[in-house]
Length: 453
Image (cartoon, rainbow, N blue to C red):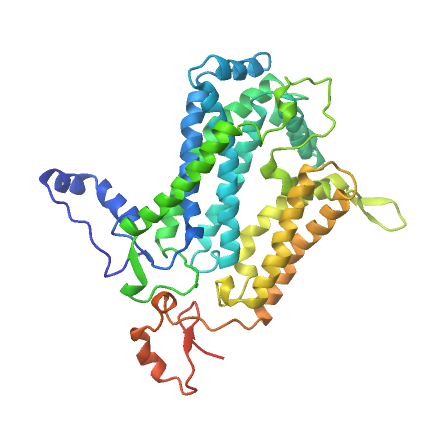
């Protein structure tokens, strides 16, 4: 995003002038996260989660690299090396707990970031690419987290790998060969552990690369804001530094208090007890569950208990297992088309009364139900609840959202971001003079005037 009023970087010394000419890295940083990057002045704390997600990624990379120095990806000793890290490596227990809980906090931040995007329609034009890259980051995170969960080689690690890779066997014709190729054998063993360790080590750097693209794409149209109104004038923005570096710094401090509390006082609260038992291929746990951040999609997978068949013929068109796999992956992939499903000209949920009701009383309770059912045993009443929640989840995005975006009457938008923050905007008085009905005029996200009701 480039504005005429944005403060320009000016090197002050001979060294910085030479560096700016040969390798303008200070200019890049200044324009990306400094005073040279104007940001809407009305961002609330829901806009802190991007910075927190980047900090979580940094924690995972730093702790992961150190842990990899002491870990052995061998089925015979993997569980023992984790115990070695915990007991013998200097501060190994802290690194391991920070890495394990860091993954959970990473997903907490990302889920909040995503649902903020849902409510404020951050996926709408001109920010579609930012949203699409964000979904790619989420998919990469899920793959990385799954492979990392296998590495401790506990009971849940082994059987989780067996169950999740077994999903590929549901694909017709190529499913079983694909599963064998992924595992390097017929069951999780040394080959699978080596592959998962290698990919788990590599993927965070791939995520970091996509994050750079994500931030790059963000700087082209600029940040969204709670009103959904685009920046029109200099008074609508403030420099990122020092205003939002201070604000993000406060949010980071709160985050670190919660994170360190979990690491030092509740380090195992989010883990499964069975994963502290060494993997045993001959002993199946009574209840196999993935990590908590996979539970909604695990609930969708298990919601399909019957085959799709032609009535009265017994001919199966799609087995229940394949239906579950399609639905599980489809529940995330449909986010890629979200910018084109929601056709409302208004972005912010604050100005969309009907959308807001379906969001708070439809989508949010549905996700809570899926979280609960995903971690519960595959028995009643959790099965029927997960089936109802799965049905509404797809109904919300594919039916409710497109219809609501067409029929609802949004509230009038403020003329500008400045007006939304401080009240009457003097710069808006001239355009309002032509409003013959005497009411306040607002603007739609495309910049066109919207008369007040």
